[in-house]
Length: 153
Image 1 (cartoon, rainbow, N blue to C red):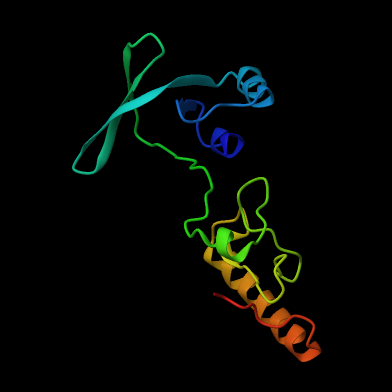
Image 2 (cartoon, one colour):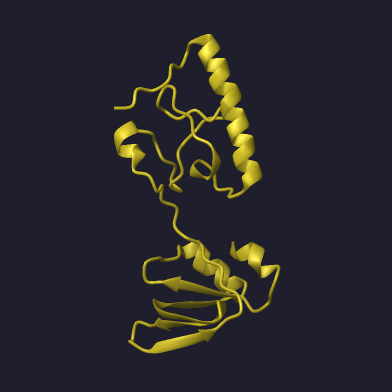
């Protein structure tokens, strides 16, 4: 995300809240690209009529720092919102997405996953394409009788 946003502005800052941390390669990249890193606990978001004005962060020393912004991009941590994994037993990738093969099949026979739950891409066109691929594969698998639909308790 930083590499993409860097194309749009020379005034890029990376803000990392207490809940997140950066890897050594990420920190090295920021230093090399001369991108400032701001860390702390988010204490306030200020706006005027919905237009972002600033955010405030408390640093490790307890000092509150206010950062004036026009734009804020948020990169949330991926977590599946439905707790189906515990009941269905499908596998997740290291990034938190449902693990699928090229036919959108999960490790559970008859269970397929499409859209942003199984891909880093967040777009309607990607969701449609993965749904079309899964539909074709479901039809193929049902015809071949190799993957019956899963039993849900």
